[in-house]
Structures are given as structure tokens and as C-alpha cells.
Length: 299
Image (cartoon, rainbow, N blue to C red; front, side):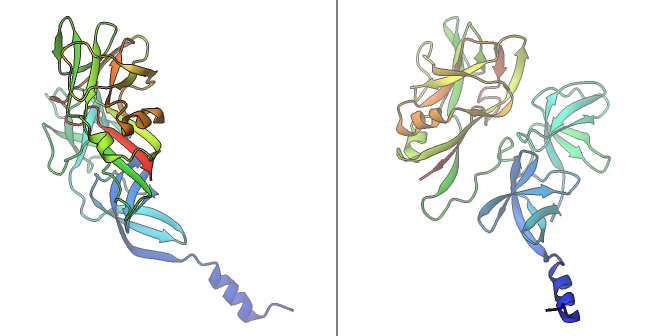
């Protein structure tokens, strides 16, 4: 049957993308260069077109074209917050938002001396420069990792974060708060029983990540992280089991899912470092997110 003019018009109209503008979501972080956005209780990965990243918890405006989503901008942008990850002159390297892995070289105020770990306020009007170095920033309740997605009504996939109750390294007959990965010290983060109390024994562990606030990384072998059975710091050197090398000692890093299997049942209670390389991570007294574990599981 020949194609009528009405059919041709209908076909052309059907090729016009369905566009929806009135969509908002909550920015939750960055994964593989894409924005994590919670939309109607569901976490989705979307492309961000804005010139700077939102902070976790901020509302973003999205554009839907057919089935694809694009994040356009922030509904009420303000100062951006970042963390210095490398020093330099006249520019330093700033990660934004902290823990995302997204970095940029930025200038800083004359006379300032930024150091690794400093929290900074970013002026994006100038293309990205450090405006101020601050001790903390309003609204930055969890500067180093995205907030967990909204929990499902019952069962399903969940992501939970467990912050450490304490940290430390034992060597020379004494404890210090910072966490060393070195041949002369044995180190750990402690969490009490809360991991086993909050993840069912029958849960399937999909991913385990740890936040490592790097202070120093000297040349040598890569650090090793393992598990331990202590709910709090022991009197002497801890025993660290199931050691595995960590290729990158800074920011959010993956650990074996087998660690989650041990932690969910209480067979092991936390993680620590032992015996390889010479890396120093900030302890809990310097960084409240030090050693935080993010565990993804299904029930």
C-alpha cells in the first residue's frame, strides 16, 4: 500500500524526541565520570553538562530526552567545596567534590600554603581557583563519600556506610592515631559490632570500598589491607588477616567482597594494614571519615 501524506507526517512526528524539562533529583556523588542522582527514590547514573560538580545532597535540574537523562545544572548553586590532593606552585591539585576522584589544577590566594588534605572553597567564576582554605564547610557533613541511596521498602539492593569508631598504629610499644602501612607497625580501624548487626548473614555482598585519607606515600611496595577480629584497639600489636594489596592508596578504593562476607557474620570485625610499603593515612582524630567502609549488598 503506498504511503499517504498523513502517514508520512505521522512518521516524522514520531521521530521527534520526547523531551521533559521539569525533572529534579538529588546529587549523590560521582562514579566513572558520571553523576549519581537520586530520582524518585531510585539512584541513576547521568551525564552532567554543568561546568562544575554539585555537592552531595544538592538538588539538580535534569533534562529527559526519550529514555536518556542529562543533568543540566544546580537549582541554587553556591560555593563549591574541594580537598587538596597534591601541592604545587603556582597551582595545587583539588579534588571536587571530595572523594569523587575528579581533580583540577587550581591557583590559590597569594601567601597561602595549601597542604594535602586541606578543605577549600572554590571560586568557579574565575574558571576554578581556590578562594579560601577552611577547617570545614557548612553542609559538608560527609565530605568524602556520597550519601547512601534511599533504602528499598523491603529487601533488595542496599548500600550502607560504616564509619570507624577509632583507628591507630602500634609500634615501638605504643599506639598512635594515624594509620601506617609499613613493616615496623601494625595498624587498624575498629567499628565495634555494628557491621554484623546491620547486614544479614544471608546477604549477598556485591561491593566493599574503604576511604583512605592519604597523608604520605613514599616509594616502595603497595600497601596491604586485611581483616581483624577486634571491636576496639587491643593492648598490643593487632593480628591482621587476609592481606591484599591496594594499588591506589588514596580516596575510595575497592576491597575484596570476601571481606564483606567475613564482616557481615562477625567472623571478623574490621580492617587494618600490615607489613608492606610505607604509606600513612590520617587517623580518626584528623579525618572523621578515615577508614569508612561502604558495603553494597542484596537481601
